[in-house]
Picture (cartoon, rainbow, N blue to C red):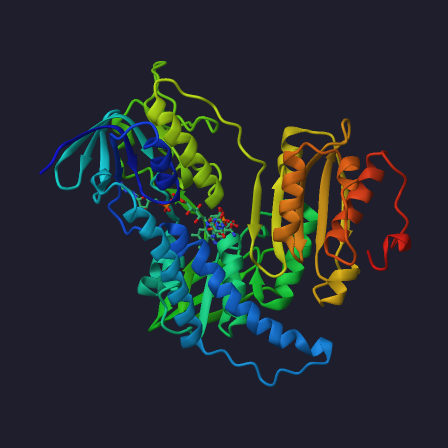
Length: 485
Ligand SMILES: Cc1cc2nc3c(=O)[nH]c(=O)nc-3n(C[C@H](O)[C@H](O)[C@H](O)COP(=O)(O)OP(=O)(O)OC[C@H]3O[C@@H](n4cnc5c(N)ncnc54)[C@H](O)[C@@H]3O)c2cc1C
Ligand SMILES: NC(=O)c1ccc[n+]([C@@H]2O[C@H](COP(=O)([O-])OP(=O)(O)OC[C@H]3O[C@@H](n4cnc5c(N)ncnc54)[C@H](O)[C@@H]3O)[C@@H](O)[C@H]2O)c1
């Protein structure tokens, strides 16, 4: 049994932990990267990558089905579930392989393949009984799905995202609980792959959207494509090999029924892995959920009694923004600061950006509608519908709505919410514009090609410029800007 003494201990070798490691080793060789679970990161193993692989297969099937509008007939689209899942697993394993290659490139004496718990601020107990002392500790332990207790009745038919990506074949039916990001992405993909899906949400919310008009638009659109109950009261039971779900909606007596499913997929949110690492043995101030207060610009957790905490938290463990690029940024900030401790610097964070890979895609950029309303900013709203937008109609993707928000005093772009075609790309343009502190008028000075989806964004910006009284109302369907722009 080896005991260790290092400058920086990093708990968790996921995206945040690996980023932290790369920063810390620039400053010290006395680093430990500790992980007791499977390596390869949540993103590559059971998150971003396999989910997008499954969605890519679903999109391929849907393109073929939608081709009739162009006068093209794809005779009888068939989905080979075994082949679909074989590609998902094969490509997933490839991505995991890249991560594992990166870890193999790390100094192997820095890697400790064990789980750890805090004994105090500077001491970790490893699961083989050994101890590690560290000047600073970075908690980068990721998150796991929340499973509401009523789901347990489904027994081994209760699954989470991890299980889906190990399937050898597609099942006949799945009840997807949660109309958040995972539920929408996986629910729609499975439905398009021929699985009988019912999506059960709560409170009428749809993914991360908060603009009431976009939420309503999204609800109508997805509800037309597959069986989605966005405000369901549900009862779950088990009958033989099947999960029985009966549901009702107190605001819509027509939305009620009972169906049987092969699986219940829990996509009802995730919680940080902070509850099993002995944080109660540290000096950190914990809230009622056991979560420490963290400075999002230095990633340092706050200690009680005015002590300067030697503990940093990064990635999904830090609760704030559970997304891949944020985990990497937070890891870098925490790694840099933990190695430099007790001198700690604050780093500016990037403009917020979140994309849901549903079809149409959803994106929230900068400050969304709710965030702006909550802080009481005076903002104007510009909008475009994609239903009549030139390029969107050309490619048969004319579904969606984009709303862009601007500051009434300064004309600065503040944020946007989108459900629509190419939202992943529009979201980047908007995030880069907000990051560059562009006003609406300045954004409109940028070049726009024709005919492209981005012309829809220009329409929304022109509309916003008029709302903010920086320009006249744009002419309807602005012919001089090119047809259908
Ligand atoms: C289905 C799904 C799809 C997603 N899609 C996207 C997407 O498209 N885009 C996007 O930006 N984000 C997406 N995400 C979110 C993204 O995957 C996460 O934000 C990101 O992976 C978090 O990285 P992390 O380093 O915090 O955690 P992880 O990568 O989970 O790493 C945590 C590590 O800590 C280890 N660990 C835990 N406890 C201990 C302990 N006590 N001791 C030692 N080690 C420990 C674990 O074994 C693990 O290796 C998705 C997530 C899911 C679930
Ligand atoms: N494309 C992406 O970037 C991507 C994809 C997948 C996951 N993620 C990350 O993973 C995180 C977790 O995703 P998620 O979808 O699990 O969480 P989420 O917070 O996005 O959605 C959870 C949903 O479940 C609902 N819910 C809670 N309890 C319920 C119940 N008992 N019955 C029915 N619905 C219930 C909530 O109202 C909410 O709408 C996301 O916040 C995101 O950061 C990102």
